[in-house]
Length: 327
Ligand code: AMP
Ligand code: MG
Image (cartoon, rainbow, N blue to C red; front, side):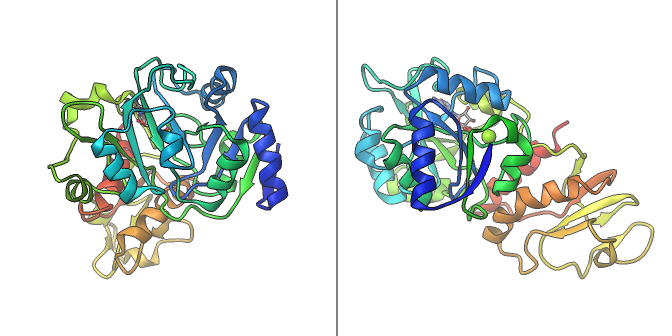
């Protein structure tokens, strides 16, 4: 396996690997994806195998344009409106497959709906055009663990299992896409992300709600699973730091103390990360997974996490943190 810096030549090499049924670590604006030709069942099977992902959990299929998406899914009026506004971008839509849809059934876990997205990353778009096939691409990490936001994360998690990693720096959004289900009676956000239900309501002209815990869970198989978890225990809404804990901070540390006395700002090297010292939620989202990984290495007894406002992309951050805290 090779990590290769992006160039027209390495993109063409990666496109060839994909056409030949191989796996490529692909940069996107959300997180790094593990890409495979979505039309090739054997290639898609390699994705499930490499990630240790349960076969009931369908993958997102990436395409480079709305017209490409229309080859595989029925774009209803809501889908067209949302696509015009948010594609390319961190919005995945679940839609009915077109008749005779050529995407491997394994990618959609046998469902008659398919998750599709157009990523807003130059390299991902060039790769999609170069490969000239839709790419099934879940996050490039072992199933259940934290998503990768850098080429090094992909290498650490899946190194031996991908044919090439295309390195293009850190992912700018840092959280997985919003998943919007448009296959039912009413639009529902199954997974919160950078595009919020409020953003979607405005564009669709109807109220878009977030999936409601148990009632909606079975709709998105992936939501049934413990996910995005570091090895270290995670303690949410911390107002101070216990002995032996590391701190994942957000905003000012002025009032953050240590239970045994002293200030959180004086925690030893490696035990403190601040998602955004100026309290910016987008910066926090972009840092979340890398900082959780870093603190996970600190041998702390737990990672205490300061509370994060539950608004805008903060809602998606809190969703990932709750899953990380699930034991
Ligand atoms: P990932 O590929 O890891 O970013 O996860 C994709 C998410 O979308 C998972 O939670 C999947 O369960 C969900 N998903 C993908 N396809 C479908 C579908 N056809 N119906 C419902 N949820 C889906
Ligand atoms: Mg994932």
